[in-house]
Length: 287
Image (cartoon, rainbow, N blue to C red; front, side):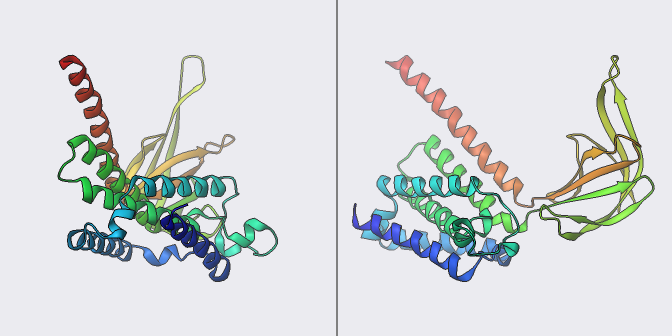
């Protein structure tokens, strides 16, 4: 193993030890605008470092292909380990009863190991982009920059995301819901169910469902897979209903203010992939 590999391994071990000693990572503290400021500040710091000392040992190490392999492998192992463990409220982790409790790997965005792994990967990706920006093709820029934007938005935007569910009866108005851990939270809106309809196929099976609601006093229609946009990056979904009475519905309010930036990054990667096929086919024709 190279010296840099030992440094990366040491960082991972330190992140695990910090999680064991300090508890869950305080992801909520990085809600907007703190998360955005941290992201921009880190990228600015890496850019200045690259411009001032592009041939330094640190820059060459952080932008090397070998480092990319190591940080990607570490991130993959981290995601597999976290994915194989049941995810629940980090504040309710008893701690010390099992190895999983001791390592604090019950919540992805609250895991110090995952935070360290994704930050190292983003730093490596950013430095690779800086080093190859001028002399690389458009497909390289679109693929790598798109991946960086999508992952950054997904990671730093996770502190601003929330998913709440509420049960609403016909004629009832609710202002609170429950998160995935069963904790009651304010919706930020008032939601009232006015009417619920079921559309049937000729054979009598349900074809679609539609709920007529009022959100903060404004009328709206919500169908399955056709949510109502209650605000910027905020959608209200119809997810279920009471099969016995048809007068009670379950709604889900999803807040993802960074999702447009994530989608932009994904579109960039799709454009880069398309250019790979087009330019590859053009080269084969020339040969």
